[in-house]
Image 1: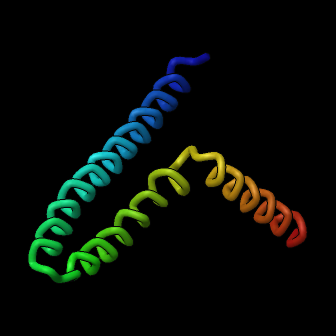
Image 2 (image 1 turned 30 degrees about the vertical axis):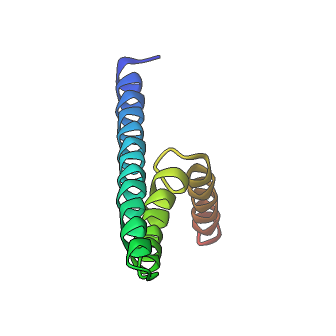
Length: 96
């Protein structure tokens, strides 16, 4: 394997690993903070903690989609890119 190909694979692998670690730390902080909020909410006899739980959970969900589903080099993303390449090359051939 050429050195430049190895370097680009290594850079992509590092980028994806860093994104996954970022999501995991986001999820851990989400769990810790929301457990504390739930404990405070229950101690007060109210159920207000559900609102930050759901709001932040939605943000965590979309962060996870960006990291685990639509990340560069992901199988789903690569299939979508390949389909677009095929579609664009077919349009290019039809336009000639």
